[in-house]
Length: 430
Image 1 (cartoon, rainbow, N blue to C red):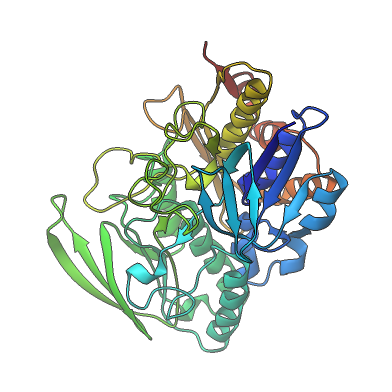
Image 2 (image 1 turned 90 degrees about the vertical axis):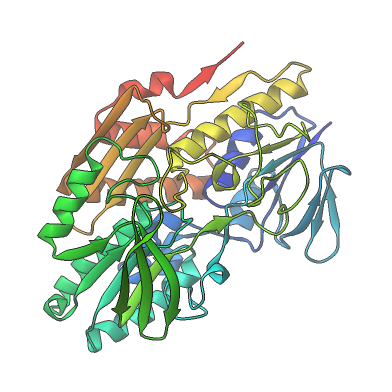
């Protein structure tokens, strides 16, 4: 009998738990360690922030759905993992021992790295549902007292899609409220160009997003280093290709949402052999940590080098399809180890993304996510918004049912009309 522990129950952790449960032997045990017992569908947070969703509509009671599948839940959360002892220390001081550990924590949000950044200071966030609820209150104030808006991400960020999504969703919500004409909008990003996305673009994301911003009168500043934020203004340095300062900007705002840089969570940060200097988990091609071979990792917590050199730090995103690929490979590899075999499954790390713009959107496919690619495609249309809504409903339904099946390939690829990608969703190497 073996005990497998999944650390984290976000987008990756829930998928991981269901995938792993389906591959366990009769006497094996599976435990999920998470801070709290509520799952929230993070991709819907921009809608929460403008009042298009209520938190309860995108939330699931984990205690109920995991219990139905005989998956134990420890909602105390992890204080520290001790990989040399094969133990997870919980926040209440108790311990959970494991034979195999799968880290799926997501990131620690590094708001403290820039003075004035974050929901405890002067800017809003859509990284967590409670942040989005706070942003909704700020949005309501903006509608009552319109003023300048600044949206974007700071240097070191690695998930730019939600920033673009929220800029366009907010613009649509302001038009619906009939106050858009009194709200100048600026998008700031460390990316070297609009639509870079930490991926050096996908298809024509640069042209599509720049055109959409022009159509909606959203100005932008790229190569933007945010230096500090005060109660009503943001200070940004626009840099040249060599990192020298090209121009300084002082941007007033009545509402601002800036995505922070990510780093590893305190439970893993600084453990020699496990993480890189930012606290992200080092893994091999089988999702396995080289120093601690019974520790695997998936999702945002995984260390991935940046795509090419940029003047400012621009991280690589971990999209949902990519995370599912990691989860499938990890489940298959641990199942092999339980049978006395060596791991052989390798995640494809393909990217399939639906970016909602409120009443429009852009979809893109990068196969693989890191260039050069076999598929490098993007498209824009009203159908993307409908597809994103449909996917939200589908995913939450499957989480509530506790279904152990691949979420993305069964719906998103059909929506995109590229079902053929299913055949290359999982690759194995001897």
